[in-house]
Length: 169
Image (cartoon, rainbow, N blue to C red; front, side, top):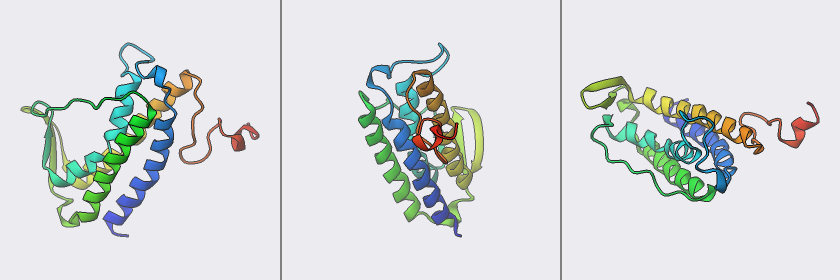
């Protein structure tokens, strides 16, 4: 299978689970964090919701410089806002992938803060890393939700909170 169709398929599959997770976030817990060093739920969820747009960034740019970027997180007051942010980022990623030239996927992409280079990787690896980041941070969000007694949706099969699994346990 060619790379782009494979990436599109994986992006769509992960988006289903991400939607389910984001939609479970309680409005009154957006500022909650499990530990002082942890991100609050709002910022964690915004990061998860926006990550599909990293596909576009990896394809259409050659670097991200945290020192030069001007980023302000979008306003979020409920789970619906988070899902909407995710859908916009997802459409950006899908559109960019559909129009991409696979021959550019081996070109280097740099992550830096000013002169400090954090990583230089081929663009295809950056796209895959962004998918991994979605899964990683979604797992963090699952821990947040579990600590708040919010039922966790299944990711790659049913969760212990879903009726099919509660009969087995």
